Image (spheres, one colour):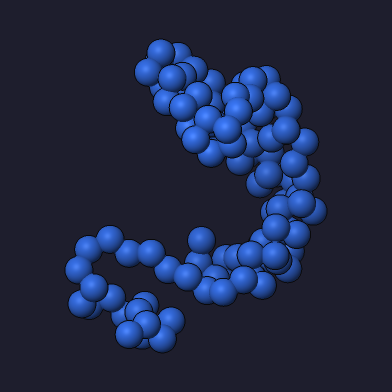
Length: 104
């Protein structure tokens, strides 16, 4: 997310309709991922690596559905407090963003 978008999200947050659409896309993606055994295995392994525990998909969905516009707005504001960072793949030369971050 570019800084301008993050600032907009922090100041106004998503609308209820935008948040509902994002939740619908995420639910669809999660359900589609449950169809293939390899995708289910990959999701479980990711949970173990990231959180050191398995979480039931029903619980993940319930937690996702509980997210509010205000929570998204607060997280965006919190992200703006941290140091700026960038990631790029490819040769270091030619990335104008490096100068913007004061990289050497």
